[in-house]
Image (cartoon, rainbow, N blue to C red):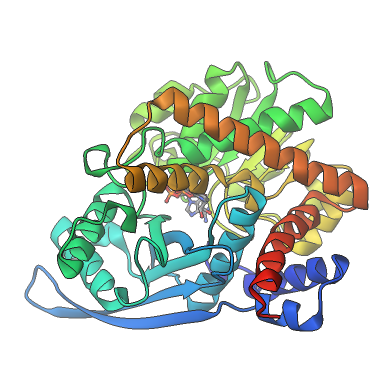
Length: 416
Ligand code: NAD
């Protein structure tokens, strides 16, 4: 997930954005505007720790572009968070929102910290301090945060409470991914995985193969990966591999997903409990029909792309495949459903949560699922259509769909 592990995700994102703008015939000025966030705030956060000491944390909030609407995107807590990574992720959020047709631009936040080594009290003080530090630039009609890597509904609840205290009114629409009782949406927790399932269904349809019996490998067993493994198992696919940061499990006959789900901890770790693990790198090269990277960035590179034996790579994680690897996979005829499309289920249901907060009327789970399915299927069709029409890979096509929407809004506003 981190820029430290990744051959410059910001530079490659910028290159793809510029290429998409050029293919669509937009001006140099448009490409120049879109290649950077319009605003990045860096904050220093003093937090009283349980042992009486004070630790100083660094946080960021990047807002890519608000021509279409308020910016929107998660806040991640991770030791490897960098300004570059947060900037790249905010651009991805703009693209994602454009691709799935939401009235938002992209934003992203991050704090350099390790929540696995912090108590609940320390995390609460850090979360509240972050909201105080960024409160001037965020809000229900400005920039709406959400959960991301190692943040959850409890952290969203603390952040919402802090924002409501500052503004002196209840502001559920300030943040999404909240607990149900505080205005969360039904289906939000599983939304990213549900969206990935829908994209896998579209992918197998394009490949003309049944989902039932399809062999699936899922890298990462956290929020996105574990629900995905569960849903794939329920849909009759064969989950032959899963992994976490400690290693990977592979069984060509299919893994016992139920047992793995029962035994995983809240940070998505389970493989340590089992003997005969293999490495993450080995898992990626095992034979399967669908490979789903659902962990961190920079996993499929020019070093291993030629050895990937999947028919489709459906990216639940942000930035798991480098540009060179995308080219190698596309040349080999591997169908790529890119991150900016495949992992958009989370932000779609975040949008539904915000809509429900704004109208004060809440939908049942069926309604959420039905609307999610409509959005995701229509978005796949749109991107697949561009890819066919323009004879480009699905990632380039998705970037074109996202850039077009932003650029049109910018032109109508008269900025360029
Ligand atoms: P998470 O923190 O819940 O889980 C991450 C999983 O990846 C854990 O199982 C962890 O052990 C594993 N992992 C960490 N480092 C690893 C490594 N080096 N190699 C292999 N596995 C490793 O995170 P999540 O919410 O499931 O997100 C996973 C990915 O999906 C991220 O790239 C995130 O940006 C993306 N994503 C998540 C959502 C969402 O709603 N959760 C939405 C969009 C995109």
